[in-house]
Length: 157
Image (cartoon, rainbow, N blue to C red; front, side, top):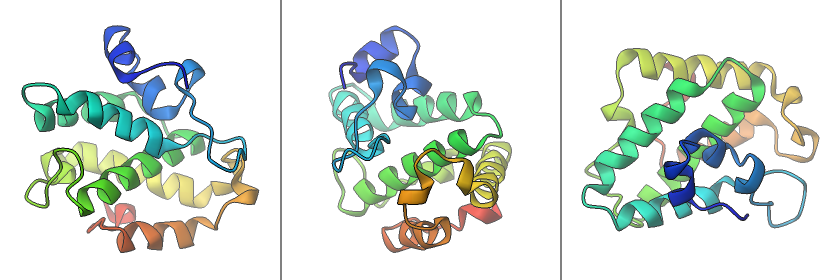
């Protein structure tokens, strides 16, 4: 990965950063050819941690990211993985994340509905996600998200 979150902010490339596009691609540890969302998510949080109001900026950038997504298997997958990163890091109060604040609680009903639409789309079209044949089945991954701290069934938004 060559690009850092401060560059993504400066160049208005938040979505490309969180999706791992172009210079923002961070290869998965096993070099399976897909993006490691956790590396970028931690990079974003590291940048935000140094800002005056990091949690409010996280909400702002996540909303911006969410608004750019379309009903597409890859967009749904990237969203699902980024939400998973958030809850995994929130679980142990990493960076500035605490159990007292929840990103999903900050979203409007329409934004949550979009999450539900995209997560259902990726569930139903997981075979269209690049590299999905080498991954755990999507239903197993969705169960793992709950295990790692996501209190919501993203499919019901």
